[in-house]
Length: 83
Image (tube, rainbow, N blue to C red; front, side):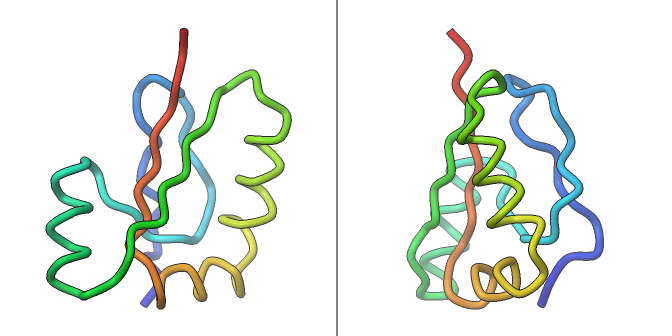
């Protein structure tokens, strides 16, 4: 089921998403949830200055249908990379 409240991206990205997909707060939480629910981990890594990272964010996590599909079949873990 979709969470009604988006969970903040890693502090490295410094952004708060307005998206619909559920996600894990930490790597260990994602692994434990994946084991418990017998689902693969959908790992999304973004960079704040990357255009295509923002496109992925918009087209995958802000679309209600895609967010529901991701939540149903995956444990979503989001991370960020800032050099």
